Length: 70
Image 1 (cartoon, rainbow, N blue to C red):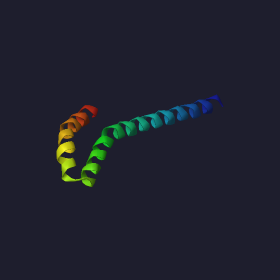
Image 2: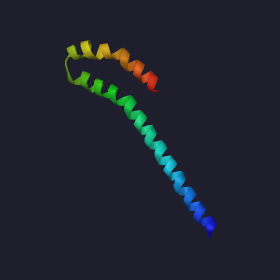
Image 3: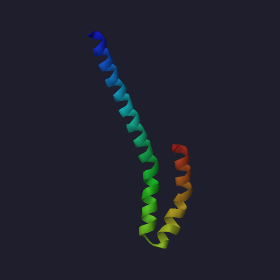
Image 4: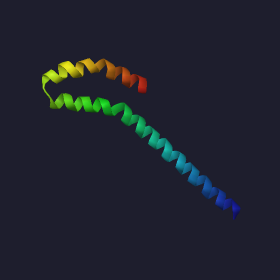
């Protein structure tokens, strides 16, 4: 009987570790990709001035940010 309880407890801990790892991966993905996605959507919505002044100036920073986060 004791062996069955330990197996169940080990299964629960394994599931908890998997859930935490999945949450960590999703959080890192969101932190990395969200700023680039927002800027890309805004450059599509707004005029050429936005693209030339904001998007081009932030481009180098976004590339550096993306490389550091990976």
